[in-house]
Length: 118
Image (cartoon, rainbow, N blue to C red):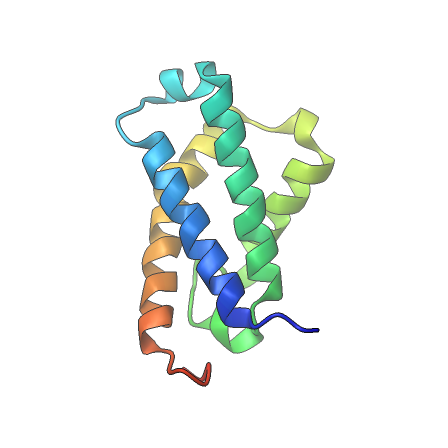
């Protein structure tokens, strides 16, 4: 049974919102020293990357932050090269790229009708 791409879009939005809550009011220093928050952000970045992989090409094209497979590549890096992660890059992704991706995903969701056609 195939899962609708709209459910992956919902997953992406939910994880991006969680990341926003996790980094709110923090600095890079407090982010990198709080292991639970850092790990939670990494998990949600993996969810976002996996969700982006499951979106149709037209949906990814409607979200410039998702096109070029940046989130999917980051998901693979977290999963397979976790030992090489740079906390400063993760912070930049969480505080700059994720909010932009969230705005694009919300816009796509609002522009998509019940049949899943944007």
